Image (cartoon, rainbow, N blue to C red; front, side, top):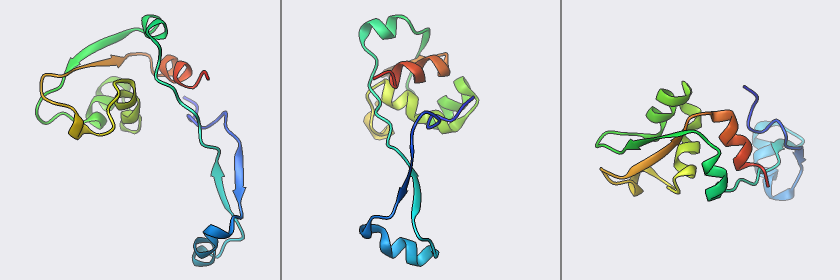
Length: 113
């Protein structure tokens, strides 16, 4: 699977605000990826995505769900963002989470704008 940043520009950041970091690391500039713009899928877009429902339980974690459904803990943020949660502290036991099953499809929809 391609990186979620593969379609974004690489930026050489020589901004004076980061001078302390460059000196600390012995660098002339810092290479960064352009910040991707992501949007939460619309009702119509969600209808086109196959998903399942998971009832949040005590002990659940986004990274554990990402491992279960995507076999990769790094995509915990997809489940959180898709459901409108900033952190796990905002999810209560019994809350129904929608888990999009095809990771590539949901990533494509989320960065379509």
